Length: 194
Image (cartoon, rainbow, N blue to C red):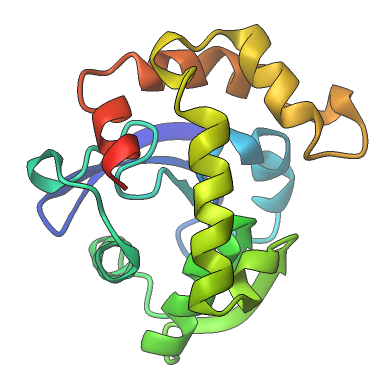
């Protein structure tokens, strides 16, 4: 597995990548407030059969949004399409976890010829109406806002333990990188405005 920044639609986009360039493409999308490290323990295994690209979504992790402005669904979907174009991926299986499932579903709906297979992992938000999605986002906002600017690995461990069956399955790499991501000058401001 390698880490690369790929220029996609004018944005330096951080990706974790593995597999042969001629293998079937697999795009992995993380959940809200997270990074591509959520897939760390899957990437090399999946790379046996796929060209794997786990991407930090626009405005997440180390993929800074354009002009420091928060990126909505349309911008994130357009950015993913630009990433696939930049990588020469004409068709891909797309797997999204949680909020990433919502983005993956929107990518399929807007670019059906790009998405050969769609896998949604634990994403009730992909099936919410606008009112339900708004309530979900308000809960997330209220829960995270007070601590993001001063996040620690322990804070993230406590938050993420409730999202998995086995707390030991939370990648230690994710716990190390999230405080670094939110220490970037643009990150908390962008997250709060989102």
